[in-house]
Length: 81
Image 1 (spheres, helix red, strand yellow):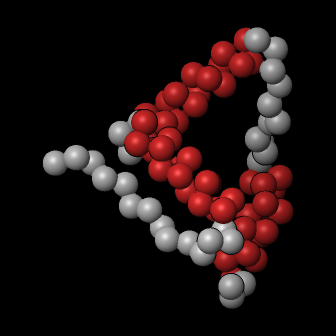
Image 2 (cartoon, rainbow, N blue to C red):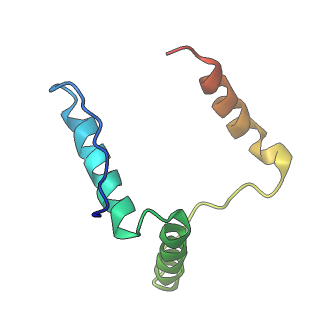
Image 3 (cartoon, one colour):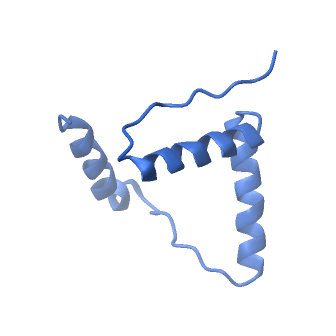
């Protein structure tokens, strides 16, 4: 049986969201819907980019440094949409 991706039906006005979901589904399918394969490829690409001179923003080195980001995430999840 063929692997079928589910498409979310959106209003006609949500063209940008439709395109984002299409790209997400296509990307997921290209890695066999395996998030580990996707991240492995992402890490390889990151190493190649760094070797080519690209710079990446560093991750917070401590829990205290990351607290503002966690607070924002928690605040957004508490909001009612």
